[in-house]
Image 1 (tube, helix red, strand yellow):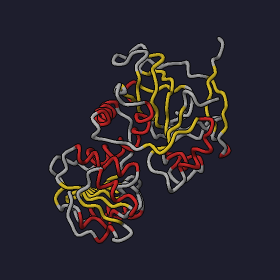
Image 2: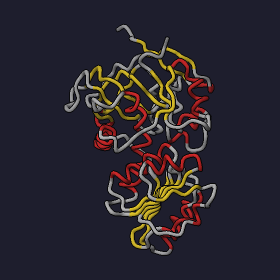
Image 3: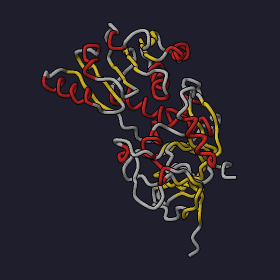
Image 4: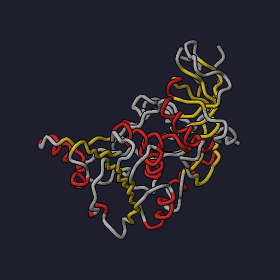
Length: 329
């Protein structure tokens, strides 16, 4: 049988080279084959390329090639026998799971995913916006709603409201019907965070977020940099939650404290999962402009080095998009 090849970017040896690998051809019954149109860089890329702590939880290091990229938007080219809700030709979006078993990357011509890990892209949402929206919006939604148990008419504090996850969290808390949103950010992001729907915006350079005197149903640390221990006094004694994106020492200490004190408070960390129904909700919000995902810049996939340099640039605001469909030449 003649092996069909596809182009991808190989990040092994910390380089990023265009290379060819076999196109996925053994489609499982519940999977779809997607031709990638657009992808986007997220914060996991640097961690995996440089083998930082926890990076083996995000992607596999097995195999001859290190193919990376999680965000994707593209078109279904083939479906498995048991796939019912998607058809060949449907435009879809989602993200590859952050998982030690993930070996594919969306900076490739094709990927295969379970049909339940992607959703139809709304017709009025462009491919680049759909690709940009996935991991940050899904992380924010699952952190606030699922881990935080956040409900309509509740109060929330979002630490890092200017970042990708944080700015999505502010808009999502508003879409979920928050009665009050306080968000922290750097001075340059204050106006943008306010325009996203925060009622109170704290410039973290002028005031330490630990000194905020207020009480919230949920505190969401979108940066993973704060200690949950410092914020237990700011969450409601009955059922208040602190949610973070990365477990750290303060997280472990706070978990022990809530356990020892038998407090009815909770501390948890979010590990985003690409799920159809959550992607559909994000798609609806994008379509109705309740959720806006800023795009910083777009690079051809062959110019990955330049794209990674822009991703690391502090002046960047929004997602760095990778044009996969038209980016190899």
